[in-house]
Length: 159
Image 1 (cartoon, rainbow, N blue to C red):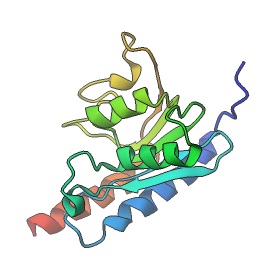
Image 2: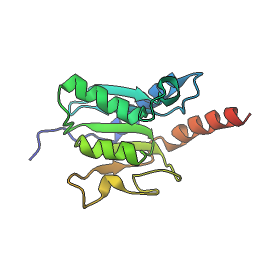
Image 3: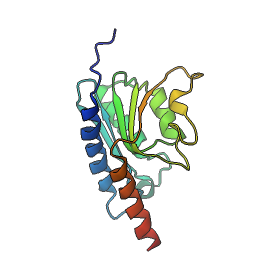
């Protein structure tokens, strides 16, 4: 039996608020406003990230990857067992794969990504039984707010 605390659904909404705040850090950059946090077993935020691809020129600088890297650095370990990844948009295949490789047991996300999602939309990397680690997925947390942030961003770009 694991000694890790299982988060309550009320935690999901509160943690998503943190991810939404992270997404807003993209500000006036050309980066898509996606935010992520990695929460430790005790509820402490271990890593926060937002998209930085345009700012850094790094194609892997997705919010989830940055939050995972920062959480691993905070813990001094690559295994993020007992942690929860919270992200405003359904993870893509790269981010879902990073989550699996980091042994994150839970992913909470807001809006669905019908074009590139890998947590049930297009692919389901997080629950692929042929992989060595599986993830519990909690979709649609504060979905309307997460989707609205993205819609506003893309509407402004089309302007």
